Image 1 (tube, rainbow, N blue to C red):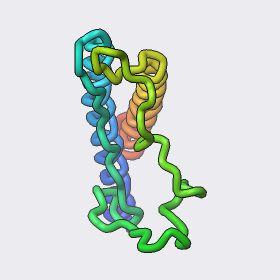
Image 2: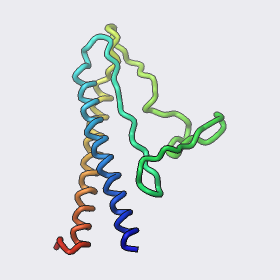
Image 3: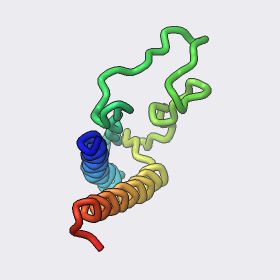
Image 4: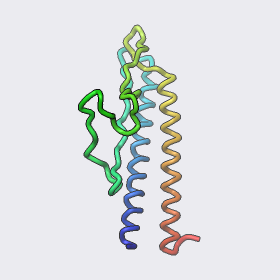
Length: 136
């Protein structure tokens, strides 16, 4: 039973580590979007979030497919509208598609999510130290 609990904790810690690395990479990409806000023809980019499975905490390769408009979409999508894939309507005359307000909102949300993941990771390490007798 102890191996199972340690394994689950290890998977959780690995998932948090993966999530923090994703946030770091996404922050760099969002910063490039902001930096190129005046570059002619530049199109903003974003990074797809990693998906984790419930059974092992690893990245899941299987997902639901919506094969008909009448079917329910993946969890969290009630209307079938995905705001992350929405067309950008604001394009400057030089062809640049960066909306600074949107990008700065993404930067702030990404930073808050990273801080949450880092805090959970830190707390998890503290709990592991207590479990092995090295903590207070």
